[in-house]
Length: 274
Image 1 (cartoon, rainbow, N blue to C red):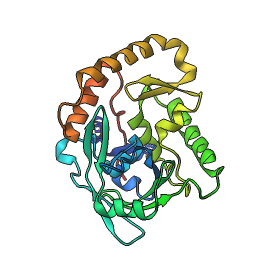
Image 2: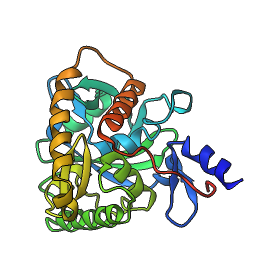
Image 3: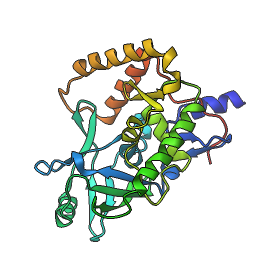
Image 4: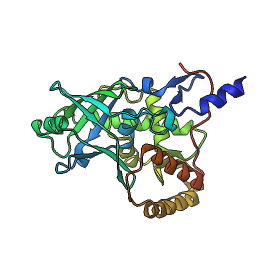
């Protein structure tokens, strides 16, 4: 029965709607996607790098899935030098996820004289195995107008996604998955991280707790936004880093946030996976 199929699909965080009645497997859908990882957060002393939401999603597409379906493995970054860097996902506190970089990746960045403003370009080769090709993009190279154009394209895609969504307030990770599934990250020039793009576009409002909404809906949602932002500040104090929880713990906290704020979980999924 259709209800049984919908119920089964709704349990799979990696089964994603393609918008036409079909569904796909997220680790396969992200293959070929190209993302930008700014090096502004790279700590050259501790060799630690923080991931924006979209990079974390493509390197670990099962992050929000239940434990038995998680792909518990490091990401494998293939470098232009021929070396391969294995990077695990680590929790650094205050909602920050990233990795301590391997010696091969640190050596590559040093050899390339990486500096603030540069970025790693990540192209997903095998989403399930976590294999990706990585190269550095220097701020001094390339078409200086290409990135702003690409950011505008991504913002337009996010605007269309939010406008067609059943919820007025949508967690950023749900927006990212929707954009990835529909090929919004497949252009040759990768955009800036989505959160950066949305924060610089007046069509969007940060409603707190890593959720976004269209500015056009703000007049009727001001009270919700104010309450959510206050709750965000309270949760930041409650969950101050006292350890290193697993990705499963991260999922539990996100579930708590959704429960307290009324944010929706993954949308009900219909159809059959491709």
